Length: 339
Image (cartoon, rainbow, N blue to C red; front, side, top):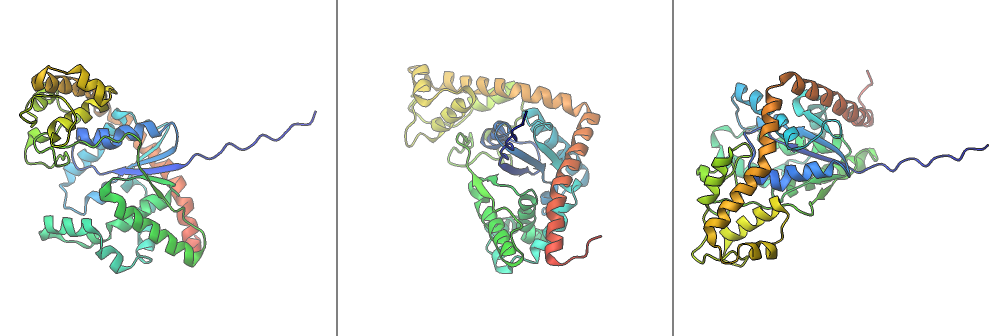
């Protein structure tokens, strides 16, 4: 009996994203990025990296960097990134990133890098250490993405310029040497919560805020979380409704919606006539409960260093196998002799 050929399964689109190991993530990082990373694993071929090479554009304490790198890996796993479903690795463990970055630097214009707004911002913030890596790290970021032939890159407003540079570099290289790199597009999650400061709700929540009451750390204890929400800045109206001019309440409603799944009309109905005290406590308790399993799993993982080491070694091997194919093609195209 003649067998019919089975159609090849359609290749899933590939997503690349990275996170810097610069201290513990905030609730904003979790709701705005990591929670979406977790959901993407079921639809896309995901490659996630702890980008510790990017972190050294600002001078780091070596011991702290090692600890923060391991903690960042454990934290994304605790949030739900599955190293069996996704390629999860530490950037410095995969040599192809630095190697491709050099080639791409030779295909990037000085003027392009000088227009990067983050270089200007970071130079102003760290005038004592305006180093060449700070200037060229967008090229390393392009290498991170292009090595894996990523179709999509989750981006916030502050990273759009870097993604555009990666596309420009890829187009220029492809134009000279032939079709080598996939041109990545930005991915805007359907449900990306924008979390603002609890003390200055017109500003984005940031772990670098001088006021510790302004942000929620993912690993904050439940009582700390509730206390911070109770002290959140609101207004004098005492009415839980989403309206222009009510930045503090709008922010709390967005957070409550993100962790409970309730829409704004349902939240307004739930807290009608109850005042801000009840609402702020409810938001704090809902966030604390959402983050509880993350904190507990993080503690379990950090207590099992052998498990983490096994995960990052296997992840690096998978990442290198994928990225080396791209690098070999690049080296052949530009005229480097094969080994």
